[in-house]
Length: 520
Image (cartoon, rainbow, N blue to C red; front, side, top):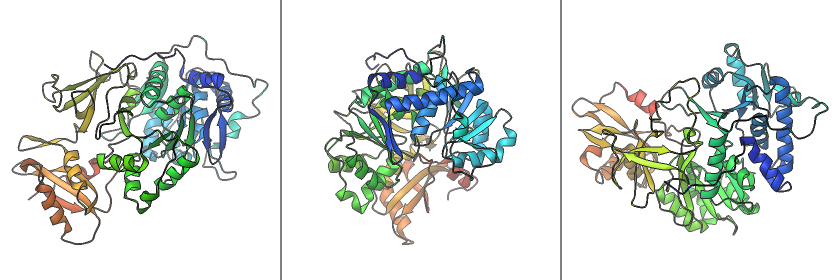
């Protein structure tokens, strides 16, 4: 177990109040639309709290808040909690059918969403009887989706009470403050219930491992607002700079202009940056302390190129929605390529054999189990959390190993690992070999049914050239580096590898397409 951490006994929205009390004039959030100090952001959250209390009585209603990369999300998120209601995170990239599942499962009554999400909600609203009001946070006058209202109507004239909003009386820090839905890659998304204590604890853990303090200026080059970055930076009293330009070169120019100390980005965008001809001219300014990546694996060669160009540590972490979300993070002072680092303070990790469930020794692969104070309170609407055992260990479904120093290296998902001739095959290991080929721009590996071996390795490859013979050459070069059971028996050219919004490879659509076809 990593060392314990002192965590303040405050509620989720108390994080913002605490920062506003300590540093009211400090910039909390800035983007091209304006700047919010902590005092201003806290007052904005109070406006949301007052308005939501008027509509719900603060009786624990579910309020859906879209995680748009905007200060309005931060204010709506903390304001909903301050009102005594429960925040339900709404991913603005969800399809209409998934939105319907999330809204029905959580019984969302009021939605604070962007125009695109409001439009998709309109398609399924007849099947959402609990949903009473939809407010559009980026409303354009005269161009609202059916049944939606502009955000200004939520606030009205605010009435006579415009002072600070008091915390709900008798609040239990172990009650559910937020529901975040899983990505749903293997089935319908599940509602992860996170308590005030879960989220505040993880904010303290993240701030500790990323070395966030009041001097931190965090450049968020992310498609959505992430709870981890929001809560940890507010806990530390630092500044968040939101970068909406998807161009990674532009994001580092912004980091330099804003004198960022921390840069948060996605592996897929960082890989695109390293491959960009403009990369040789990228700088970030002397205040930059580290580049942090998360959401999926960051290739060691990408991290190395960034470290060489910028002269700062390039690290990655690991976690799940069930863990609020972070459980591991590499050490800025001593990063280890390919590792997601040791467990964060107060957190335990075990690696167990996939078949026996017994602990394995350092260097051996097995399932990653995690236990800690940031572990969820369970899944919404499900009486049991089958992924959590009787001793409080979360069975993550990820395969990995720890080195002698307790640093975690992830290998694959259990559901992605398969057997060929009774030998375990990790798709990610084969993808790593393929990506080192100069002809491969991107790739994905899955299992394909085989009459004699039960399954064989199939690879989908995005090539850099249109040469019809390049696939055969790529497979031959890869196979020369692989064991017999790992060798590629089927290969196909792809226009693009299917990925989730945060860059994770989605293998299920390919498996479904290949189902029924048998390798020769």
